Length: 312
Image (cartoon, rainbow, N blue to C red):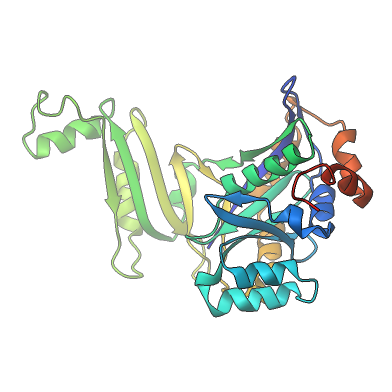
């Protein structure tokens, strides 16, 4: 499971001014607010979605149609660990994503069938709407790009991909290798070459040969999966184009997820650099939003939600 990192901001829908503001007090107040009729009004693609607090900075974002899971979430008699047990005993009961939130960024980990980051962003904005808050929660992917020198220094290289357009001389080399004509390839935009290793084999020499041979002009994408140490996980390095800063999560044990995710977040040096860049963005104001701060108090939720049909 991949843990992708995003910076975030709160945008005023009237003047489109963005604000850097810690969303955790708002999320914590929502999770603590004990009005399940209200919380049952949120859905995505016809399935109900729920946000649950798991540990200090970790949230469980769950999507399910299953009545037993919904009953467990609605009941104050069930702990989140019991809900985890229900989910892990039968994946078809529900699909969950894991969100690690800090004051200006979050890490988002999801399985193939669990709700993605776009669903989470939409969920928060739907909560804003129910409270008549004219703001939008904006996720900013934290992007990276590596140098050829970094990849050339990697001792282990796996699956890699190169995409070249007509401006790249490698495009003509491929076309000429199959005796193709200009007319035959007039509507071809680019070639993408996938270099796949045998199972667990190191194709360092082959990939580095390609990296050296392919010129920069017309190089649309070059992604190399590599690792520095034998026991490290493979990471995607983007030499052309940009990829999101991420970590690989290996554990499948629900109770160990918080520990591993926290370790990944705190030890990712590139993430620290990208977060500082996000926080230093002059286009994002640093002032606080009183309208959102109000909803760190339970009384504000009770007052606002009481006017929503079906929330009582």
